[in-house]
Amino acid sequence: MKTIAFFDMFDYPLTPFEIWTFCGIKCEINEILEALNNNNLPLKTKYGFYFLNNRSEIVDIRQMRYNYANRKFKRALKIARLFKIIPWIKMIAVGNSIGANNLRDDSDIDFFIITEAKRIWVTRWFCVGLAKFLNLRPQPLKKRDTICLSFYITDDNLELKKLMLPENKIHDVYFVYWLANLVPIYNKDNSYLKLINANVWLKECLPNWLPAYSGRARDVGSSFSDFYRDFIDMLIGGADSLLKKIQLRIMPNVLHRQMNIDTRVVVNDKILKLYVNDRREEFRGKYVLKLREIFK
Image 1 (cartoon, helix red, strand yellow):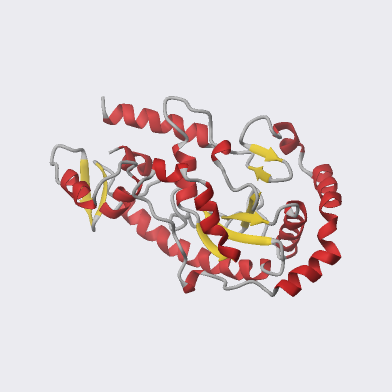
Image 2: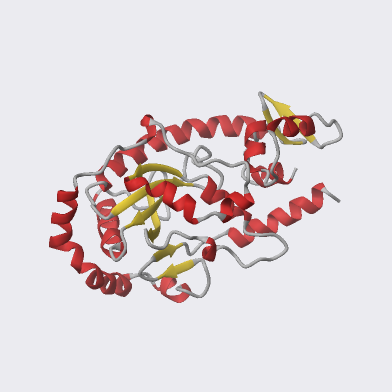
């Protein structure tokens, strides 16, 4: 019920397999099926999806959003193929709080990027530069199918638990599901597996969950040669510290004001997390209220 309640906040009904994957309790899927057959639970089912009473409309919403997500994935793949020319990128993943298949029609596309160590600033410079040149940056009145480039980490700093909200009545469940639902579309040097191995706490939170690997239809393929990487790095890689100074100077004031106060905006040589409108605390509060309503 807790699992279904969380995803309900995002109009996302769940299949039994998804409930088993995200329930946070080590069990067999047949135990989930047994529990779902309990007629005393305030649940309904439609087309194999389970949802809270009086919420049948979210089944249609989920199916509709899957079509939107399919279009957005095609766009994300085209852009990721361009980003492959930036030789310091180790991984590009499409991120969303509860799965990349639940994107609204008018939403942008979140990229989570892993870079080489000591190359995070030069990587961001070229990512943002390419996106601006192609008119792909989100604008206040134009976000549909644009690319959000607000989260980078280096490959020597893959452990992310430090970015979670401080423990309150409930842990940072939004961040847990965000990490579990990353979909890698460019995966150089097996960086996605390294990310998962560096965050063993994720399996403690979701013991039934398994890493997600993209099929060929959602993967941009292998990187360019090591010679290409070394040649470009010899020409430009050393500019990382200079580009850091330039980017810090031109960053919007709203980012400067919130920089490194908490985990919303984190700026250093290993993490660039630039979410001014980080709503995790808001979602956690709504989740607590929803649980009180269900279990009163």
